[in-house]
Amino acid sequence: MEPALQTMINNMPEKTGKSLEQWKVILKEKSFAKHGEALNFLKKEFGVSHGFANTIVKLSQDAQEHPEDLLSAQYKGKESLLPIYKALVSMMTKFGEEVKVSPKKTSVSIIRKRQFALIKPSTKTRIDLGLKFNDKEIGDRLQNSGPFGTMCTHRVQLSDLNEVDEELKSWLVQAYQEAG
Figure 1: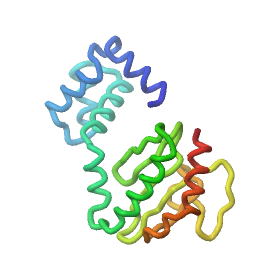
Figure 2: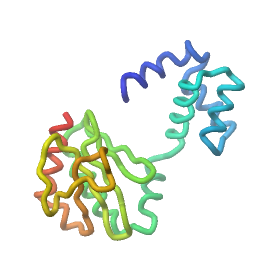
Figure 3: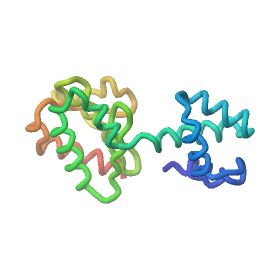
Figure 4: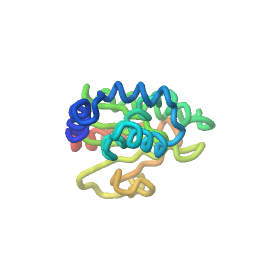
């Protein structure tokens, strides 16, 4: 967790009158459909500042989305890609105990001290694997970042489990090392 966010969470009881966990319970009872509704509720009903209200709502929403549910949604209709996903995660989690697998709505971030890889089922037949390097040449297989923009510097398109090979592993190891 980012130090600034952790500081905000630590200061929450003093600044808002409740801990993050207490706020999560309140928001869960109300079960707002939209971020803005929950934000306005906290600001109007409790006088919570915009910054704290936004943080509370965001962290409450993240807590409600279980990693398994996020993965299920990502791979719905793309189940044939799951073996590739599992092979990638299995490979990268063996790099070290500090590797964190963080599912989001449309992708999975792989983090050391910073994100070094991003797994996204882009089509029904292809996973785009984003990698972040400090300085690496683009080649035939190791392409520019494409749709990942600045989140990654490079991308590898994978449509077959056999493409999770030693060459790919060497790139993943390098990205992991550079993220440390």
